[in-house]
Length: 500
Image 1 (cartoon, rainbow, N blue to C red):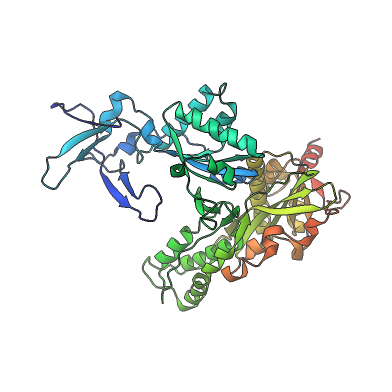
Image 2 (image 1 turned 180 degrees about the vertical axis):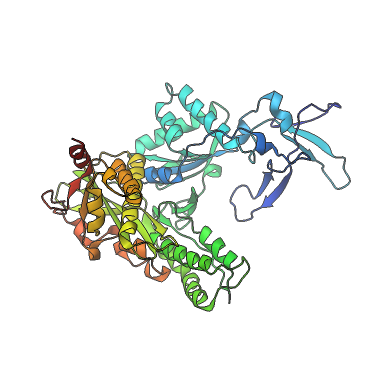
């Protein structure tokens, strides 16, 4: 039993009553009424339970989880049903999870004690993840394949994983059920890009049906995924109004959830507009000035266009000769950005290019010259590439990083201690993050990060194939870095030689 009625007349020395309320979500397929517990509500002392709890460290990253999800030919997602309610709290601490309840308006108020981990407490994510990690370690000998998934392909109670072949996928699905069932947990809401994995699931455990829901999208860590088409898509809800306030602009931009930066040019445009609103020093409820308001209305009214964007989930291929990461960095007066593509070379001398991720930052209020911004774009690219490498865990033959700034390349070709502090700090970061990477110059019209740094209106994005598969020159087999080019440099060799 997950909840226990308190019958003792004496009060314990330490206790806490958690306020709670219901949230109705009719659009949900399963849990339409969810109970929300607020352990951040202060007591008469002014301190809440969350204020004194040790939160623990949760090392989970949506970017890394989704990036790995794109590696699998046979992919699936599933959810651990009521995961928190399967983890028992120490009996000596259960009085810190008390609630009051009554069955009717005239009924007597009863006190209950929650015996399991409660969502709404600051340490709940750590306790849940730590429990799953311990389960994976304990059952590694019996379920090695499932244990690997529990350690690396899970985000809270969502499992987002897959394998290269169907037979292994079926076996993994069965193993995951068994290992979680060993501790009383159940998997439900299965989704997959192949019907074979859904056919062996109970109909109540499946979130979509291939025979009926061919165009249904499911949420995968906040991103909409159409399993039948095996594409990531974007859904927006736009409210067209005659005028907008600063608060409404911020609220709209915050709802543009895109952890991998597929909508990078669009996000840059939104960030730049938001920065201009901030520069006006408006109050939260002030209406936007006419010039900014016109641009914002145009941006918002065309947002529905991004529903046409469909990103291929599966980035791998069955046969390939080598893999290259192609990264680009660029800046504009308003922002700077970076974008990374995955380039496969086949045995028949052809190549396939797919976008992996992008990042952008708005330029600071304080006006600085263009070359430092170009260097900041290089730093952003270096950080993005490092994160992608740790996420994908692929054997990458070469990493080519490109910028159209000769000055930035010259700085990167200089030991950091020879430079001024602002430049030196960023150069040292790039040199540290991009060891064994090749930096080279690309002409401005071929720099794919130009779209990310300058931004685009939503109507221009769906048909812009350049954004998803890069320039045609990346598909050419002779797209290789000339190591004799004066602007080519390998930072690992460069730094080593400068230290001699």
